[in-house]
Length: 394
Ligand code: V47
Ligand code: SF4
Image (cartoon, rainbow, N blue to C red; front, side, top):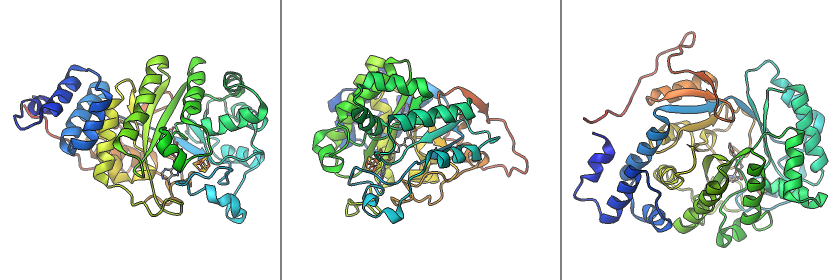
């Protein structure tokens, strides 16, 4: 018998939690108030059973990762998001970097012959990186390496550069697509609700602008991701409001692939006085995201941010994707205090991490096409990991 069936027969469970569990079992959507109720009342074990039920219904044991590298054009930024360890650097330029087009292309060329499938371009916002700069960059990358998927920038940059160029979002996104952009990562979403956004990220694009840019991109038949920066001043209502706005847009366009909760890390930024949330809260949050966002295919745990161990545990709490190899190419989290100071994992390490918790490692490309199924693959000199899989109760 499934763990969810046993849970439904438990006489000690409250009527609200039983109703939500029944909805999940029947494949029905839960409401806004039910989402808030889960944050306020549901314990981890209950949430894990529901989220894992949905995860296994959608993907079985399949667990996705990709081989990618990050390109961070600059760590300087015109904006001043309170949680960001980049923003203050504009005032202290000696600590910052701002790459030229040539330097960026040299980084891309370093991966010639390497089996990476994606370059993820994200960083601060500076005036010299305008529409012309980015269209030239995307075209140059695609010309050099047509098979490398360009996943780049967020509505924060797009809003800024389109406004400067005096073009509307539809025109701008079409221009980006024609120059080689293939998908948009999920950043810049933070918390959409103005009660929070105006405190932590008041000067960059609004929630409505963020959503409008993704909508224009989806209308072109293209895909994108969405994130939520959680664990600071926001409440349960703000988190559900954030997911509700995403769920509504996804109902209209179907263009989102993956939801990525990003845990607030508190080192070297203007919110360092706020303590970080516990691992229990991280897992509860993944699980509630999996339950609430019924129209999202994937939930991703970004291992560079939350540690390898939490990433492993998250695979039992709704997560089916643990991002990529990264190759120590991103600084944004190490600067904000993440455990991984030089985030890089070999394919073998990623595969073992997934196999150790009894799941099936699948290397995917950005659009979730299978590149390699590592389930029965043995690496040379491989020491067999200890398998642990939750027993199925009959
Ligand atoms: O929007 C900044 C976050 C995001 C901190 O789409 C912080 O596949 C925690 O969106 N603590 C950018 N988070 C990164 C991003 C991303 C990462 C991995 C994969 C994908 C994807 C997207 O980083 C920003 C912001 O929310 N961030 N500072 C901090 N102190
Ligand atoms: Fe700039 Fe992004 Fe940092 Fe905000 S989060 S200050 S937009 S780099």
